[in-house]
Length: 190
Image (cartoon, rainbow, N blue to C red; front, side, top):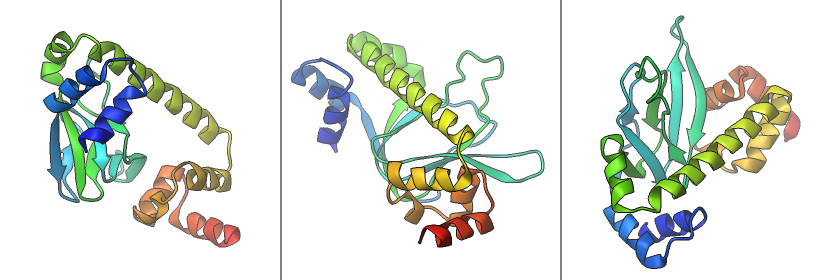
């Protein structure tokens, strides 16, 4: 698992292998069981995560009591709620383990201490965040301009295997369609 972390950090940094090794050694890796809630909607987030193994779902319950899935995160993806500068620090989302997960667990309270301890970490973190935001913008624009079938086909290409890791009704919610529509799309494609 440590090697996975180091290889990921190398994509966003020119730190030496020794520096990357020290950072990886300082990180807390935690195992969570399927169904574990990492963050409840309405709580103030104090952790961030990086997925080494498993699948995590981000969702919210709307005012009518309906669950809406906003994202799924899988191996080598980070899960962070960015609201530290908002007036209301509480999360709009629930974060839940869809499978047994192995996660790097970051404590937001000691983030600055980690940056002070490892000077290149802050720049690397910024690059990772910029990359994630860029991907989110691209995905959002593609989502808004595509049909439900195009969304599903893109998901199959971009996130192979996800459709077998999560319940169909949650996948349909993520795609912005009903489970029945997803079934019809799958029949047309097959």
